[in-house]
Image 1 (cartoon, rainbow, N blue to C red):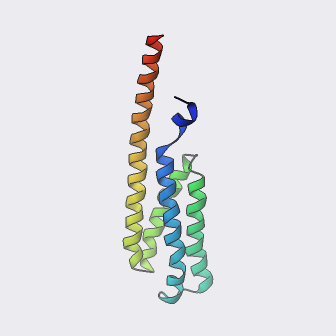
Image 2: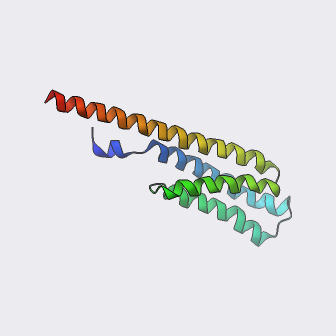
Image 3: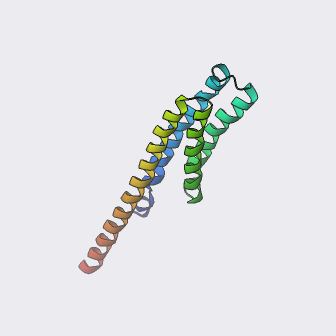
Length: 128
C-alpha cells in the first residue's frame, strides 16, 4: 500500500471534524452570552469567538500530539461555559463525549491498522 494512505490518521480526521462542528456551536454562543446571560459584548466576543477560533486552529494543528491535549482543554472550557449559560453544560458534555469517542476510537483504529500493515508487510517479505 502507498505510504500516504498508511500515514492518514483516522484519529486526526475524526477529532478535527468534532472541533470544526464545536467551533460553530461555540461561535453561536456569543449572541447568547450577550442577550441572555447579559455578558458585556467585548467579553462575550472574546469568549465565544475566541474559543471558536481556538477550535479551528487546534483542528489544523492535530498533526502534533500536543494539540490533542489542547483539544481536551477546549472540552473543559466548553463545559465550564455552563456556569454562564446553563445549556452549555449539556452541549459541552455532548461535544466532550464526541471528542473522547473520536480520540479513543481513532487511537484504536490506528493501532489495528498498524498491526494489519505489519502483518501484510511480513507476508509480502515472506512471499518474495
